[in-house]
Amino acid sequence: MKKKLPLILLLIFLGAVYATYLIYQDYGSLVVHLWNLVPPLIASLSAFYAIRIYGRGNPHAKALSLLSLGIFFWFLGEFIWFILEFFFHSYPFPSIADFFYLLAYPVLLAGLIVEFKNNKIKWTPLRLTVCVSKCIVFALLVIYFGIIKTYDPGEALTSNLIAMSYGVGDLVLIILSSLILMIALNYQKGRLFVPWALVFSGFVLILISDILFAMYQEAYENLLSYARNIDLGWITGFSLLALGFYKIGESIEDTKKKLLGIK
Image 1 (tube, rainbow, N blue to C red):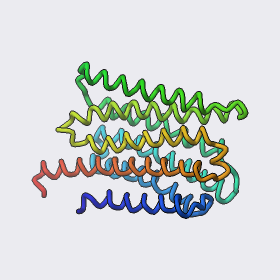
Image 2 (image 1 turned 180 degrees about the horizontal axis):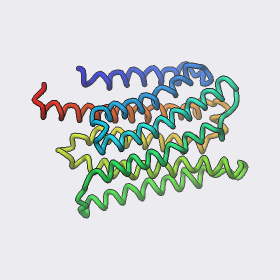
Image 3 (image 1 turned 45 degrees about the vertical axis):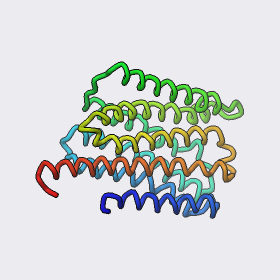
Image 4 (image 1 turned 135 degrees about the horizontal axis):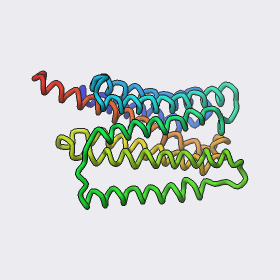
């Protein structure tokens, strides 16, 4: 029951969020803004929990430290968005919030690179084919939906570049996390596969949400329901990241207990 508690809490949280968005539909309310702030903060703290379990000197902990910091930058972006939109009634795109959103990408990228370098994988033709195929599919989707479809000639060049940057940044994170996922599948009978699958899925949902936001910016600014429901993708994505990082820490803790003979 204890191990299922994080999942149960996540489902309760997401149930409350979805009910607020789909039933209450007051997209400018304080509660809606707070829903957006909670998941990235919890995701950052969950990565920090995994760091504590690994131990600060562990190379995996170094990777998770960068991932935790990167997600915290995403949280700062959300917090600044909340302040500007809720208190100053200003639509915060583009704004200083984008600085922190975009700052997260090189930090997250560095964390995934460190994690990837900490592991070894024997590349077989099948693994290579699967990996390259996934990269091509995601790249084509981002190029079409994240760049071609999101470009708006009526908007300033800066706004277009910022909007398209998110999809490109997400694509890089997805490619690297998919490589780590492949490594996790073959590491100690796949013990870390599910946690990293949750992280990968979280990045995918964030990518989809970023692309939809870029495509429907005007509707989002005008608080139209079909556009504001894009928030649900971000919230769910960050929640999956939180659960994934927590499960990484939980799995490592279980391994340590087994080695020490602790039940």
